[in-house]
Image (cartoon, rainbow, N blue to C red; front, side):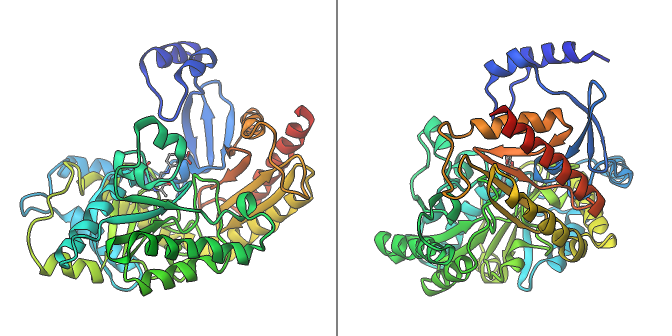
Length: 450
Ligand code: PXG
């Protein structure tokens, strides 16, 4: 086995990292993670880290689940691969689809399986357009999304995403994708109350629909809580108003459940948490807790019946759609979530405990706002608590704090100057306390360093 330095050397020579400045990484050398157990990671020098991000918002059942490894092994021995194209199926794809129909809100009886959240959202775009073509309204092609949304990194999903630094690179978005203001009261709400701002940002959807012409609009897409954008918990009245507008203009509502799905908010779906009635729900991450890549689009009967009954081929799919090993592992992962009552645990035990502890950050001099829901949390850092003022160099303090967290054995991510967490759903109350105390210490050290 190579030592840390050799690994870093080889890594920077041969491996191009996602969302990374390769030049600066070459100077520093990548952090090398070698093993994990429960909510903890270990690096190649033996340092332990509390993983406050569950990998990338995905390792919901925690690390080291032997049963998931054994399930993959058994499936790989029995049927390592077969496709689900050309009128073929296999037991793992059938079993997982049936299970997802059982766990999903009423009316969601079908799923289209893919390998990631990005593929799920590309599928969403094509499915929406196929639906409207079958409904004899092919001119309904525009999808409305939000500034600072994250829906993936493929061309279509990045177009639906609303991060301008991503769009700039490639001349995105592709045509017929529009963006409206996000419900980010802390950063953009100014003197409005959160409720006034919630209504304003939701009404932006109606304005956009009227501007485009209602018969051109196919769908609205949003994450129940924006994750990568900075754990943006919308004002209470935001989603009810969005839902009302979608129903009024009969446009499809797509709830991107890639992060919020499978218990993150103490419900099986973020849509349930917000009492939404979506038409499509892209899923990934917590579906398999990241043990193998898999995603999907959950389809409400309102859309699924049309796709099935009207006939004709949906010319879309991936070699590994419904991969047998991924399906088997996802199914076993969902069994763990059910058997260990992880969704209920987040709702009644760890979610409320995190909320209580997280509120304490309000008294920290560097913190201007805290937000949380279920096992998602955000801390807004500011040089002036009372005015919610940004730092003169946005993002620098967040980076500083993130590096201090790593040094202290905590993975807490920064999005500009917002610190965010999304720990594994197995985290205990005592471990939440440990995470909180570590985070507090890191905020203190950040203050001192400033
Ligand atoms: N939708 C949402 C809401 C996501 O958060 C995707 C789709 C795309 O999923 P895939 O599996 O294609 O990555 C995501 C992914 C970050 C970060 O830095 C977030 C994601 C991925 C990578 C990094 O917060 N979210």
